[in-house]
Length: 117
Image 1 (cartoon, rainbow, N blue to C red):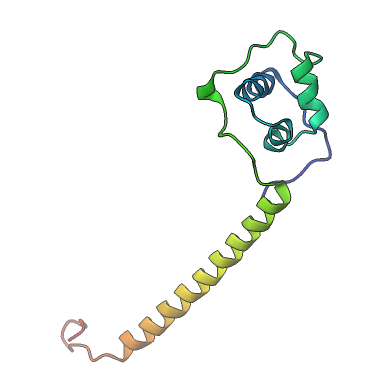
Image 2 (tube, rainbow, N blue to C red):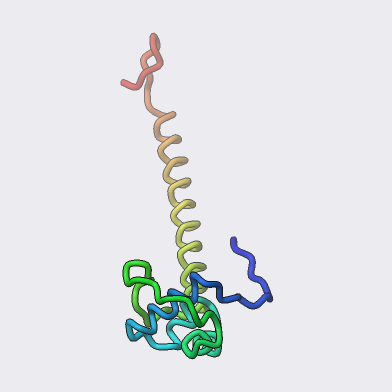
């Protein structure tokens, strides 16, 4: 599982290029902030040129899909639900294997080679 840090996310040149590309594509500032996990002020700082003023926008082929994006809280909740479902499916598969193994051991076997009849 990923550990979260209290350290702020720094906008590097690659991220700034993608932010500029997303802005040029018409993405909402709030959506861009959610995608990168930064606050709106950081996106605006890139937009106004206060951060990485000489970085060119990334081409459309290098951009993530357009927003809006799920919040981190909703994504985390969905991940927990998927993990719980996976555990339930695993438990069901284990129960089926046990049931099958029990049925198989009760079947008559040929005395010479041990194979099922």
